[in-house]
Image 1 (tube, rainbow, N blue to C red):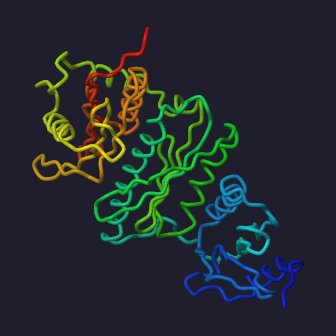
Image 2 (image 1 turned 90 degrees about the vertical axis):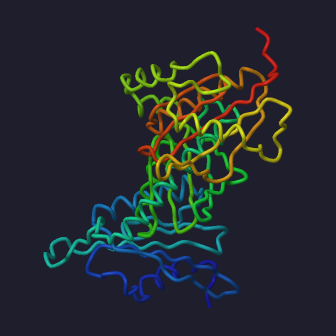
Length: 370
């Protein structure tokens, strides 16, 4: 019989006395994580999760998990020691227990596991595919977070959960926004990055710009951080900005059709995007923009990736904000041949393997009074 008063103590004792999974080398540093639940004086737990890490990585993971639980998940920390972390998952009847094992450093026979172990060609291909998904999801998250005119001077972070279906990336219908001070955001971002990087060896995590994203098998979690003052520090390269600006100005007044100077892939991608139907909820009789992602295959053939995103535009001020955000995305993605006109922003990225187009249907747009 287990009472609420001795629930935590017995959970820790059970975690320490249970056999270590065979996949873990007990002579090397490792962590094990249990989820315990108390129901009608009976204590149940899930199958433990864990892995070997180097001493340095285990130290980093231990520090990150505490911040991940308290600052990101908003869980109450019950116990935090050198070798154990306990926090509530829901109410007091469910807890998470993580044990950290650091072997005696004086034992020279202990082997430190390699975190960047030798992988097969198939494994490397899987990782590369996941990284491509993560980059696409991060770009989509930026578009979704700032397309509504979010104040860039207000600190917040957004959570997104994307799904993959074959080569498609299925966007989330909604996002969850959380407002925090800049100091807290600056702690959450590296904690989320480190925790997801080391928690599961099958996960692939990518941190780039204002996003941290991680992918399991078919699910992608993206956390976008808007930390005022940090975006400028992360992209301080004036030479690159001057180069991009020079290229984006090479457009004509005739904005209905791309000019001959525009990269043929971009010209083709723009025409394909203009012909796409808008999504449900977008009024085609009012100004709107539509975003399309395309893959470049073979000798310049373009294949649409995922479902296009569309949204109505209210006034020229909103249009100007959208253009500015889309041009910023191009810089973030280290775009090749970025072009921005009155009717579209488009660029090639991912080493020439992808094209992004933001087409603005501004016919009869209502001008904001001067």
